[in-house]
Image (cartoon, rainbow, N blue to C red; front, side, top):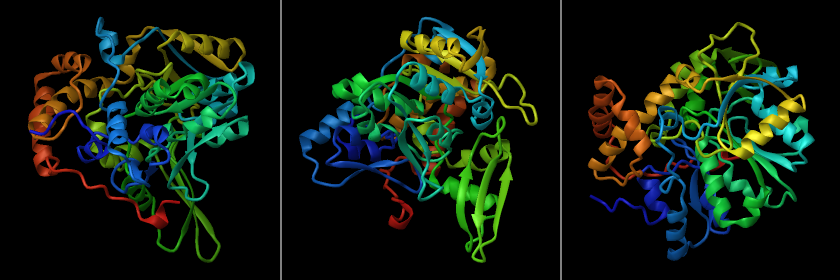
Length: 420
């Protein structure tokens, strides 16, 4: 069996341990850039000679392989990480509420920080202006810029590699991302003081895994893509809750058309089949290391044409202060909830956290380097029914053999013309 502790970026990538957060690119921008792959998330690519000592330092600093462990004192913290408070609500601004994935809460908090707390901007992800299939991280400083990024993006993305925008912002910023993105932000902040000083608030969205660009292509095929048409826009969520997935094209003759499908169809029947393996071994799908975590309240059935709500987990005092400020300033409408509502709202994420422990055991037994074993994930595994325990172990072993996950992963870069 290989040494279980990765010693280089190549170790991390080839053993399927990289999330694609971009922290390494933020720490060594002259040597590493994030680049698009076809079958996973974004991956670090060396653009100049990477000294062995720096390579080892980046591997040691990787938040994926050196995560911050959470408290396991109670059932709630075992499943969800630090939980100070739980709220349910939505943006007071109806346009923001309608445009957002689930009530516009993330956009509303970010806008409140910028307009009422003097924040310099919000680092978040939106669709690339050059290629609607791709994502790009940007620092928004106005309501209009924030709204351009409203709604989830179920495709590869990272924010940590653009922390230079935060470092140079001249004041505190909100940083919004997936759980792995926020872990990357925190890791960079430990080593770069200017990033830590200007990271005024971190917000994580709940995440069930990142589909690859192959997933995006499959979704477009599902929507009726033709080779002659040029894609103009692709929206994954929003404009109602949970919102349809909508693509728009322009034909060679200049005519435009669009197609849509429901979130349940697009995610359940297409995109989730293309999630990277690393997401299957992730123990944090809810942003346990963020100041605030925001996700869908699936315990309440969605209504046709409904504008949606969000569940908000307060994880730090900094998060609590900003959330209350946003409510007091009229940006949010919230009601308190018992933390146990999380189990009803997101049961799949609870089960996944437990199953991950079994998957990591099997990955180690296959001879590949693996992520650290977590006590909170083990407690979740113990709580699983026997059938789920067997699926997480022997089912994973079967998958490892069938998909040859015991082999080193070769990086499949997206073609150069598709990278922009």
